[in-house]
Image 1 (tube, rainbow, N blue to C red):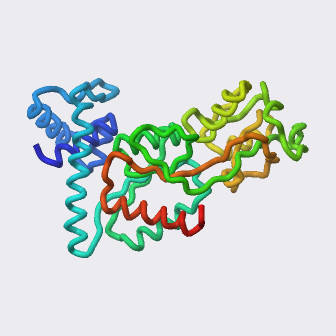
Image 2 (image 1 turned 180 degrees about the vertical axis):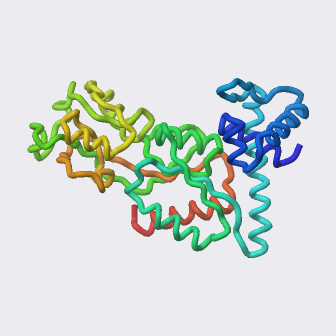
Length: 297
């Protein structure tokens, strides 16, 4: 068994497709298939259940995935140590990013990191299920770190480092009765229609928890995964929505009113709590957290 075979195995497991994994690894698909079959012969059983539409891990494959990621991380750490001894830092940092990350200046962080560590490759990615999925991917090792916002519901194996926060406000149409209020009581929102983001996104989870804890109900009239579109729907009168001010930057103005008892929108840097990061990833975490301390957040 060779490390490259484990890399091939992890790519297929993560992509759930030989075609996508081959493209990711810059291999022809036949070469990738031969590598996986060789690995399966060595382990004495199938690692994947293959269908015409999907590739899924078998129980044996699922057991191997964790160990394969650990072995590859150890190999990366060894390369990092040798590179550091020669005065340079190399490697890859896989960073999960929320769909709307406006509360911190991520571009400035990435620019500075790239300037200081030019030989490190940065691979950013988003997640369809928002912050919940990003947290899961940090826990399972498919991401090194992630920027996410969840109301305390981080899975085991993940540590959250708070970076910045701001209040969630109620956005509503200009002609809505609540638009002229200085502040809104939460009970006044009972039963009203809402525009909202998908389950798993930080704001959606926070507001769902808020209404559940208060014994109130709300109707999700429209669910979208794009905040500018959501703001437009609010302006058009489809429903209200909880948002922070930074998330509306670039959207057309909409009335936003404080709601008593509403939670804050808090962005955190997620790191693994049970897995050692590579030197390149640790350097990125140090940069982000140093910026947090510098601003007093």
